[in-house]
Length: 268
Image 1: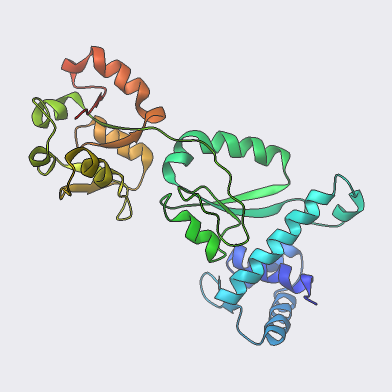
Image 2: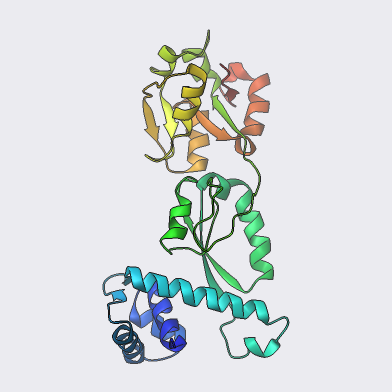
């Protein structure tokens, strides 16, 4: 049988990053935290925390943290039916979740705000590419993920959330410089593109689809959805943007292209 007092200490050390901050959060002494972690490590027969600045969980420690977070969420889910379950517990439970940057910049924040207002949770949001967030679930770093992968991770359920429409766009000045006549492989190989990070394959896949072959793209890397749009507006390069983020710029750019503001959709 697992000692959930010790598991709570472990999860708090990992979340807070140190034994001292964990002690303050749990209203106990640092020595009490150390003793609980030591007893739990002896019970499990392996190290659970890598002591450092900050402290980090080992693979087994991460699995245990995930387990205790799930148990807390299940307990909170019972409080409406069995109020005594919630007596004496934490008022809010950490809920780690992985999401892609474009979702975070558009629909996710308002949706999760509504959820957090109703559920007794503290959101711990991590950002990664939509094709890689499911890996965070598999390794136990989060309890939920917004992902482009339909197949659920082991022990998880998958629900469709909808589709996000992307448009290839650039500023009117950039369009005039590179795409005044047409969009083709040779032009795309010369026109600077924008990517979020090394995992971002969206632009390459779009080019492969319209050119029917691989084209090596010159790339600027900008790990921010808002910076992605701002750089495009400034004429730094072209990229695929969520329509929700650039709709107003497309509308204004259609009628004021000579001013160099706004943006235009790139069509093959």
